[in-house]
Length: 215
Image (cartoon, rainbow, N blue to C red; front, side):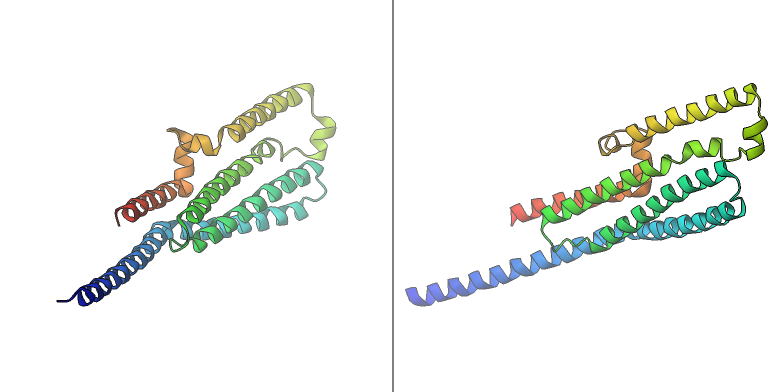
């Protein structure tokens, strides 16, 4: 075999090897997208369910607000609930859109940013949802109670509502992305909202990066 024939044979082998590596890479990214989407299947259904429940709850609250529109405390409470629940519905919609846009065929850095944004959106949605908690301690106060309630009623109401406000502020400040990575109730709550699935997706990205180094 001449030198030229050997070089041509070597070039042909290199071309086949390169095509094989490209095919393997495409298969790897396609498999990765499928694995990530399968991991998020339950979360997609969960997000749709939460969106439907949130919209339904706002319809109920809006109807009650109209029915009791002459009660200023109830109306104010209903507005807070509508705003917080509306924000949560929007948050779930954003989460759903992020999940549907995740593609492992994009850059790994881009996918990591998507997952980080998804996690941050989950945390923020949970935090804002808790802000409506205090209103459930006083929404029932009527105009008649405002005019006739005695000192004992107001002291009790102030203690209960004050405690709810303190707890709500503490929860809001505690539910963070940083705490979602630690053991505890925050991690459990975020995991239930999609944190576990995000962790699985990140694990696969690490596998893909290691595979890329090997080839």
